[in-house]
Length: 146
Image 1 (cartoon, rainbow, N blue to C red):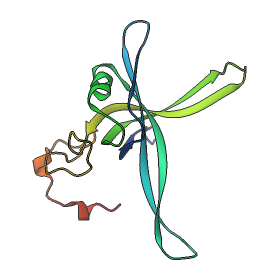
Image 2 (image 1 turned 30 degrees about the horizontal axis):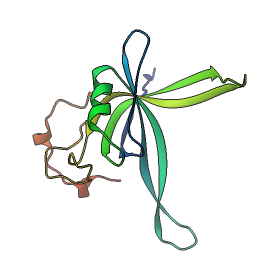
Image 3 (image 1 turned 90 degrees about the horizontal axis):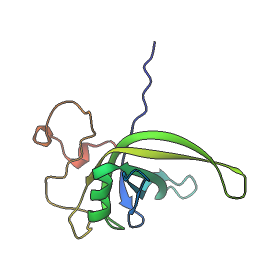
Image 4 (image 1 turned 180 degrees about the vertical axis):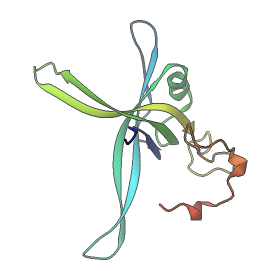
């Protein structure tokens, strides 16, 4: 019997500043939106193009507070989490639905200035990945198949 797996790993850039709220019990919840580009070859021109995909991310607790404090629009981040389906009744009485990503971990990439590339120390390892450290990674970005 196959196991159920609900896991999402994304690396992209924030499309807006984080939005921090608190539940009535005082729990912090931060909303992020990231863009992740997908490369495709145009069938008519043969040229490679990039198409952005947008994802809504929810980060709970202390990690959400850190996201709100240190992240800003344009900053690259790595998200490791799970998909969650939500349904609610809108103010106009219609039923609404959405799929969002609940982050288990958020890794801040790039420099504090919001720039993309930085020197070392930012290799993303998804939560629960096999026990090695960043130092165990012997490949380069050219070895990644995407």
